[in-house]
Amino acid sequence: MRVSRHRWLACLLTLLGLALLGLWAPVQACVLCVNLGDPFTIEIERARLVVFGSVASSRLNPNAVDGTSEFLIEAVIKDDGTLKERKTIPINRYVPANPKIKFMIFVDVVDGAYDVYRSLVFSTDRVVNYLKNLPPRGKAETDETMAARLRYLFDFLNDAEPEVAADAYKEFATSSNRSVALAAPSFSADKLRTWLTDPKTDPARLSLYGYLLGACGDPARDVALLKGCVLRPDERMSNAIDGLLAGLIQLNPAEGWRVAQDVVTTSEMSFVRKRGVLTTMTFLYSAHGAAVKPQVLALSGLMLKQADIMDLVMEHLRRWQLWDHTDVILGLYGTPAAAAPMTQRNIVRYALSCGATAHHAKAAAFIAELRRTRPDFVKDVEEGLRLEALPR
Image (cartoon, rainbow, N blue to C red):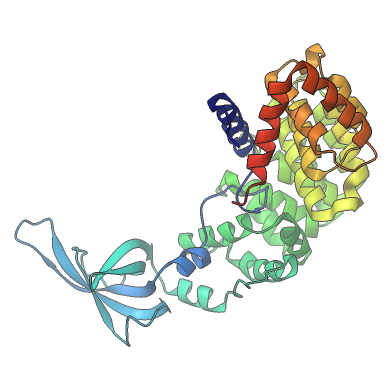
């Protein structure tokens, strides 16, 4: 099937917009975390050789720039059979020898020569035991097996080795929402309370820590803490509303959902904070499903009345396959509140996706009329949905 250049551009822009908003991504990942890249386990899986050790000796060339080094292998993380019990690896670059500075290096072999393409610095050998004892990723990994990995990783989130602490967080970030929810009740509330209130904690982690505290914390102590962080955030907490609110809902559902409604209906509330509430709903519905469906639908109904966020709500409802607001969404088409091109597009995406549901007849009639009045527009939207469904 041939597709016009204009239609391909429209589809590409749609997918790009969804990716930037976190609605379309190649892998399942915890929405409360910041994507900081792949964890060690995934990098190691792709690598040919990974070893840990230090530079035993080095020689600088006469130009005082280039040189060679001999890397002393203290632990083999991965070997495809190339090392054959080697104790050292020659490196075609100059690195000052220092037994106190440890490295984990990722190595390829090109034309018989060892090529180090990535190196990480450590002050101890803790990373070796960390990786050795980490439960492996299974070929048929489930939320339950992922949760078991997270229970092990939790204690390393604030490790003294920065690279280990960063890797533990990356493991959380690349885990499913449900696996995080399954593991969370077993964590230490005391540690989370300390990390959440420590001004040295990376702000990017506060959303995750807020949710985890809510899942394992003490309502008598932590409801007030989390509620204060949501309603009166300082500069560090301002972008963590999604996890903080999800944690509050875990500790006190009635109060948490009421606070969420207050956030989305307060006229002066920023779009960023409203979008944070939408992320809260995404996490909780993904993790708990039918248990939170009534609250998710009620909050979605309120947000569909707001022009600045309604297009995102429609797309989330479509992704969740929740069709209860079909009449409201279809009724918005052609109104001033839904005049934005992206909002119109998302209404049509929603209608095209209804399928064999109780609302299919109304959606089908809506699309049939639109095919008569705006046939090219409908084709553009259909092509975008087709591209989105392709294997990635």
